[in-house]
Amino acid sequence: MEEVKFINQSTWKQKLNTYKMHPGSFLMLLLVGLSAIATMGLLLFLIAYILMKGVPHLTADLFAWEYTSEDVSMLPAIINTFFMTAISLLIAVPCGIGAAIYLAEYAKRGNTFVKVIRLMAETLSGIPSIVYGLFGMLCFVTTLGWNYSLLAGACTLSIMILPLILRTTEEALLSVPDSYREASFGLGAGKFRTILKIVLPSAVPGILAGVILAIGRIVGETAALLYTSGTVAEVADSLFASAETLALHMWVLSGESLYTNQAYATAVVLLVVVVLINGLSGMVAKKIAKQ
Amino acid sequence: MKQAELGAKNQPMEKAVEIFFLLLACVSIVAVVVICVFLFANGLPAVTEIGVADFLFGKQWRPGENKFGIFPMIVGSVYATVGAILIGVPIGVLTAVFMAKICPKKLYKFLKPAVELLAGIPSIVYGFFALVVIVPIIRNTFPGNGLSLLSACILLGIMILPTIIGVAESAIRAVPESYYEGALALGATRERSLFKVVLPAAKSGVSAGVVLGIGRAIGETMAVNMVAGNNKVIPESIFKGVRTLTTNIVMEMGYATDLHREALIANGVVLFLFILLINSIFFILKKPEGGRKKNGRKAVDA
Image 1: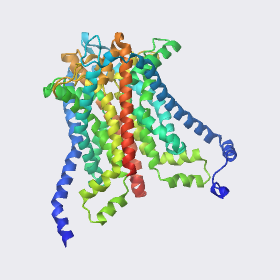
Image 2 (image 1 turned 60 degrees about the horizontal axis):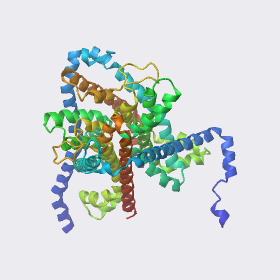
Image 3 (image 1 turned 135 degrees about the vertical axis):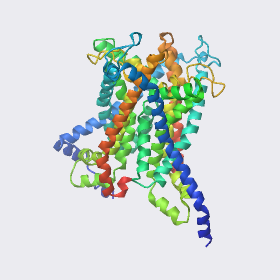
Image 4 (image 1 turned 90 degrees about the horizontal axis):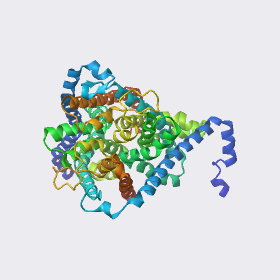
């Protein structure tokens, strides 16, 4: 019985012979393996390096309630980052998912209007964050008179992450098999009901993946925020107060040679936040996929 | 009878829902239009005042002397992006092939979150990492102080990896398994099947990933600012400092006024036009394949 099981699997010796006859294939395999190792090695080295240099400088002072030039506390920046992320997602996620539903479920394939929307979304996703920063500065900060503020920053960021959410959601929706929809229609459900109860739940892991990427971009964004949310290192007490996020805080610190150690420590916190977000969302996605 | 009535009752609701989603879909269009209007309205007056040729091809950027030529920055951006693509695309696509088709499931469980983590690491952390690791290595190995075009290229090559891997991997996975098996059945080795059959079939998705990568490389600001040296001249070698279109804005916007400020916004407009150009090239490249898809099986389309 055992032998029957493995009858269509080549042995190591056979594989070796194949590669001897096709050195080109072996070379490609080698390159592929090396690339994967390089990617992983890079990630591990980066994390290990930042942790080694940064953890010793994580002092209680760095998490003091108030920011002063002596303690260089990052707690206000952490709180600001949280608000910034929440507000940006609140604006962008419903917009992005709604638009993706239209593109994937309602629009006819090859429709000119759909092509225009897709073109615009692609355009948006290509726009550099510094250009979003410029636009945010011109539109929200100057023209609407919000000054450097939490709201100006969040609005800028929400436009920035919109195409990301739209794209990933659309891909997730398209990957739901048509048989699901047909079965739902066959049972008498309407289009909206089918989307809400059948298509969307099946696409949740894909959508979440997009939202994860979006959160990552918000937490790590500096260029789009420098001239929209400003760099006041205090907790924003209103939507119209300047709010320095953690990444911006690190940017300010790394610009001053006095605070290199604190910059390392901030990098550790940023890394930990990113790892936590990724881990949590990964777990959620897995759970939903199982159901 | 009851079913039909319910269906009829739901008709206006269904229509309203569709229009609601349609409006949300229009947000992207509105956003692009508004961004264009704001940038062009604020940037173009400066260009006419400076002169189009002097602005685009002027080799000197000296705000104090009212000289606003962004040619060195344009060249800097192009160099840095090309370097990043040369480093990032081969490694990224090959890693994607490994993850989609070669690596065992157990390893994949570790690899996939790792790549997602790479994508999640903030650019400022990459920049800082490059500043404290890559720049010293280059300073000690090559001439110059390490703050150079080469540092920027390596840094950007690393930063676009997760973008390219993520998109390319899902594109490769979307290729029907029958293509791969068909090639194997014809006697091709695993690698030959992957690179001659599966990868070409995934071309549209892979190039979408590359374009996203190019966008990220051109648009990257803060990290590049930290390692590129920011010299306002066209670099003579890859070991010389370079200033890109993005870093020019971020370095001077904080204190710029009047014409200087408008020139920086115009600089942003040029960056924007660059992106539009790349996007158009991408769409032209992508079209023939879209045509072929229509004649092909529907499963491929989805």
